Length: 164
Image (cartoon, rainbow, N blue to C red):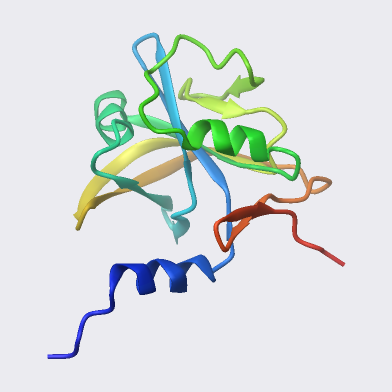
């Protein structure tokens, strides 16, 4: 059996993978909750599926399980403060994200206004994945703004890529 990488080595290696920054959010009853997520990917074109990976200690996976819906907002340059706010642990669900503009599509899940892109999803399934839950969503609606640039997370910092 091969030696296992040390968790700090693993984190350092993954920090070298530049990724987009998303806020994944849901509405359960009259409360909203969302978190910053970098583990997001497309899964299938037929049917239209995406996946997000959520730490099992975070309440979002349970809230999505109960609501059956969620939205993914791909953040734009200039939205690093939004990413930082949603990255704070220990927050409670709230009736509204008053400090940020939001929009809604068919599921009623909150979408961050001004995002590069967003996806409105219904829950397809949740799969166990170690200390995370892999949340698979069926995309009901999607939109993007080709004039906006993305926010990127690289080596533990938010950055704006140079796109030529």
